[in-house]
Length: 53
Image (cartoon, rainbow, N blue to C red; front, side, top):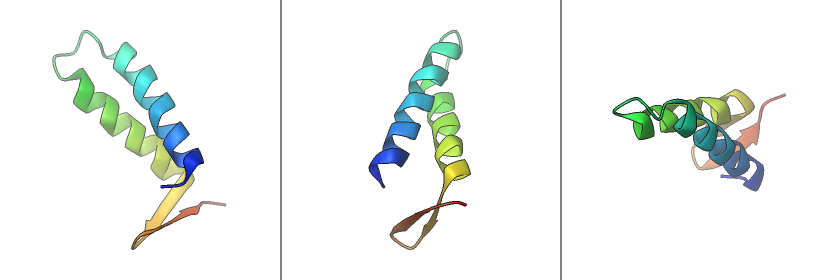
């Protein structure tokens, strides 16, 4: 995954982790939010990540 996509993932994960801290499964929720953030900006074709336009 490109460096920028990784930065998006971790920023979204950390924000969601704090936001859902009271939720029992806050780690799973944070991962879902983080992947959704990456998928809004990037698409994956096989092993290649491409920035959306």
